[in-house]
Length: 281
Image 1 (cartoon, rainbow, N blue to C red):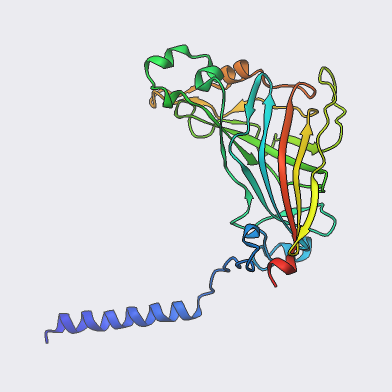
Image 2: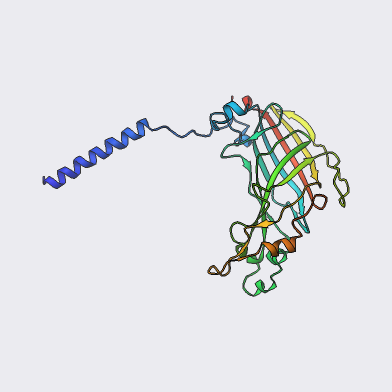
């Protein structure tokens, strides 16, 4: 056997031994624990081990899974119906004040079609000449802009931002942001908005308990007292060599920024709650 071949084989053995040692002593990633049978909808509920900082800040007591099945979000002059369900999954403490979630939880990114499409949000009628009907459609995705809080059977506070999705607007066109969120204080009772909005009233959900899960169904949570900030990150991308900011056009067409008392949110919501020890026995 030639000397180069022998050296290559020895080198290969050394590499294999090193790889085995690394695999043996390297720390393994914390896997997300699977919920017990019948509790799969709570997969986004974390253990303290999955989110280490929770050990001193947060005591996981309840797991939650909610689904927004309908409603709408009216921001400025644009009213977007909720036609695709939005789920929120995670955990809360014993006082229902704080909310946390793991990699499988949080708020789902469900697309809602915006009436009027991209032309309605920009006013650029000439886009019809460049885009087909599908490319003219505009979608809104509600994303968390902070942690939900004050979760009860009749209320929830949601800091959100709305991602406007269309190729014309680029990848980072948002209404609201992590630093300037839209803060929804949703309740099932009667709101007390500033004018010109009038009070509106939600609907308390029905209540039942079955197999260690509490079900709250057919509730309607409302808020018409929140403000909506202007758009940011919207850029015309038909001509990559010359990006043009569309923030001003979006603001003008959508009627934003919009002061408190001129906007409205309504969410038809089902909620499931279970003790953490039942979900992860």
